[in-house]
Length: 484
Image (cartoon, rainbow, N blue to C red):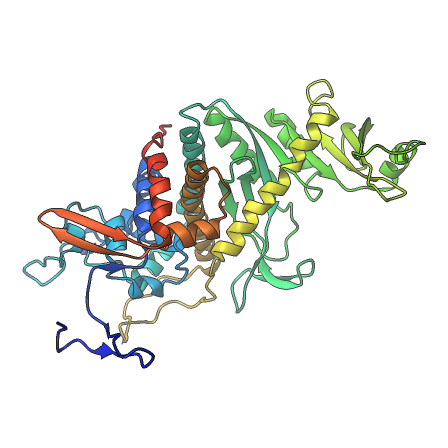
């Protein structure tokens, strides 16, 4: 029997079908449970909440900082890009359970109020204004540094956990820039002729072999790829060394210049980079860029030629390797140059080339971050003048649009790392590759119904997510908690 106060919707194609719209413990985002399980096992959201400053008056706090962080990270991982999504999903039971610090039935019960009628605990998700203020509150330099540090912390913990606690690994750190196209009047967004669009041009560090994002820094849209990259790179290398990992740097032809190369060399780190060809390099390589006489074999061949080269702006000569690749059906082979500070004995050309080619994998992961998460950056640059329709009498806190946009990008990167951790576990569980979009659609966006009894809660999921969760959970249950 249906409640007479609940409206019924009756499709015309089948008179036997009645649709009721009523309050029920139904979720469209059951995957928030998976995200909470992953983040708790790695402990990074708690790590982050312990270090960030909460400027709010403790007497007026309804949603603790750790819950605000979880809310925003989980919503972004689920594909809910806008702050308004928190209002639309305010009463989603899976989200309420997953972000809350309370246990048992607490997150699903109405919030108790004190003698003044104020809520004593959260009732539903934080509102859109509250989440907007989270970005504003964390836009100072120290908070943004902590947010950036959390990316590396998360990646290290996940990598170590995946390898059963083993830390001593050699990993390539891929540094590149990505264009984030924007629309409107965002501070710092500029037209970039290379991409023929108005963009921000952040610099990103990631690990090709594992897919984790290590750091990201927002930059104006018209800066060069390598702009202010030395300090960014040295900080990442130092963090990875401090975690007992053995990093080396992998960069493209837009980065090698004397200050950067010398700074990396002084730090003791190794690097491999592609360098742009020029007249000097063309003359050096000309005797080798030709095919040998005779019928070519079935498999294309590759040749490596060791040279020493000093660019005009360099203070000394450095090792370069000419890579010549045979292409069937072509009269002339392809060729390009690699630059490195490894010795030929430690890393001959045959080893150097596959190491550099991992950059393609890194670019794929960075492309996923850009296309799957699509960070929605704000163009608001004015201070808030009204609150709930009434003028704000006190002096409004100045809005820092560029800094707040960087906070938004950082939260998106944190959400990427959490979702990526689940994607890797799913790939291990099934023995097949998983894209982030596939993981989101098949695992995270799980519809379900929650029922409560005594102090127990049961969530029943159905559809394609059911099989995926059954495959994922045994692997997730064995996920080794990493400690640093």
